[in-house]
Length: 215
Image 1 (spheres, rainbow, N blue to C red):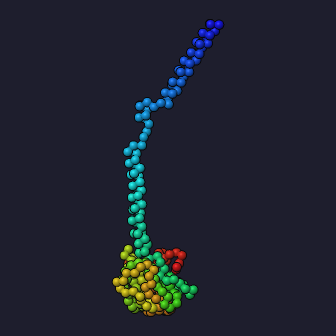
Image 2 (image 1 turned 120 degrees about the vertical axis):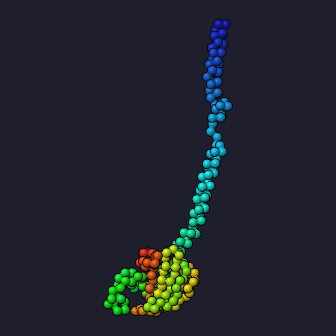
Image 3 (image 1 turned 45 degrees about the horizontal axis):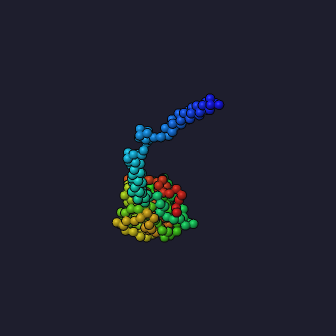
């Protein structure tokens, strides 16, 4: 009986020893020694600086775009893309850029350096782009004529007007009414002879005007 009790005590002690041996390492794994804690990455000032730098760079880029926005908008205003007339139901392009017969004699071939926009008398004529009026005169065979310098190599000319609503030296905005359509000068009917010049050379207005036609 005593022997049996002793064996039980010994087996119990051995079990406790075994449990303690496997438990202590497990508990120590979860604990952080000073060395382990130091190895844990902590966001430091250097990483924060990187975030701030990226943020500042983004804000700087946005600010630059905002500064450029007025310049881009202004550039579009200075580009002659707006049709100078808003056609009525009677309006149409009566003559295009290029070679044609003289509209008066219909005999001699000539080069037409613009497009003719025909419509009712006194149809409003608008500036195709913002700029400064450099001429507002009676131009002989071209009748009452306005020439606008847009300051970027482009000029536009509007001829055969019935009346001129601006004068030389006036600063006009894109879309502003500058004249009314007429038949002054050497013509066969009411229209606006519209021309676009780039660095002094006439170009086809249809290459710069809005593709969807008059507004």
